[in-house]
Length: 551
Image 1 (cartoon, one colour):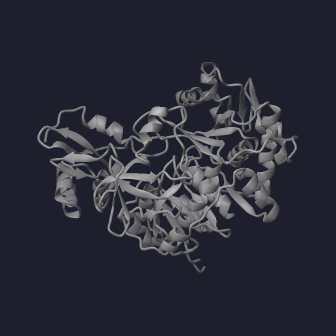
Image 2 (image 1 turned 135 degrees about the horizontal axis):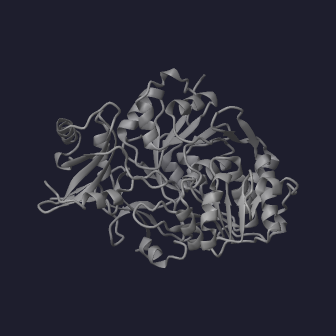
Image 3 (image 1 turned 90 degrees about the vertical axis):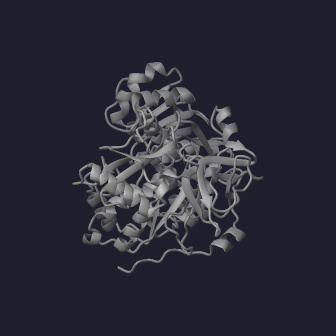
């Protein structure tokens, strides 16, 4: 099979000539999905269950009709624009039916990951005042456990299966409902009206609510065209849970805007061989995975699989270590294009086909947005000086950037200041405009006058063959102010010993500047993570500083 070439472009020309207009009455479900169903109907979704047998192919018209049915159901139940609905559905076609149906009616869906506990659900429903909860059968018990504590709830909907008392089964209720939902059934929405609410991952505090309007969906044209590099002939696969904003990037807006087919695998866990088999079997052309997955693949003999269909691979979720990029390139011939964005933004920094990739760099700002490295006063930082990653506030408002945290003015005021949106992440900019991630603003380690990036130390650690995963935090120290402490998960077969610790420390000294080496290493079986899979360094910092420093 001949590998399809990437759709490369000239970065400087793209920034110079960029133009994207958001119509005032834009609605993604109508203006993209319904339109494509009528003009160029094709496969939109390929769903696989846990046994990978009997894949189901869903066309754009299938998604259009099923979402029409759900919109009609919500209308019959008395829901209207800007009512809030908590949604907890795994990687199943029903997730699309619900989200697109909500968009058509104007109901604001709040996706939640399937790892949420009853307490998590209660917090989200009460924090938002949601009137409706839509979940799969296995989550009914969680909602029942807290329903009496959530006075705003009016209806409970289960996607399919047996219904408990007080629940509506969507599958049964939609069976005889009309598959038509004319746009004029409801008053036209504005592109600035709310469409989705996501909760942040809560790495440093309780999750905040991020409201995304209908224009946000079309702004993902930037994500689709430049970083994800998607077209109509692509079969795209993003490894993500449906409950966080990465699903909006990889499973929803960019692929459907491009007219791509999306692969959706409803698995219970991660099996590297199984995932490589799916890439081969379904001829995946564009692939997005977190760095951990690429590192696992790099440790395998992937020559047992035909991965020649891959033409464009991207990494997201956490910064991508150079070693993982090099290993994947050797194994498959594909570069990994690192990209950066947040729940609050679209993709805002990335590496792009046609542009030199500098391993370890997030790339350059996307066309259409002014993104730079600034100081606490909002002034541009000199090259190679650590500062805040920020988006310039312009008129009109920057494409795909949220307007503020829902019902949280203090957090909004802190994020929007000095004419910029402060992402809360820090980085440096080199003389050629490439941006290099340093860490969360509160993650930077200040040791004996040196400012040390945890990510840079983690990148060095992961190159050691005995290290499978690591997290680096600051630990208070009387002499140095702070020292570098590393939490390490060892590769299979490795045993934690004092001699191995010394070996790893000396290795880091050689790979990066000697002052950055971890003065303490603690070995763990696992690391604390958020429900979105991000390492909770705030928890590790608390752990590191609960005991007396011995250095």
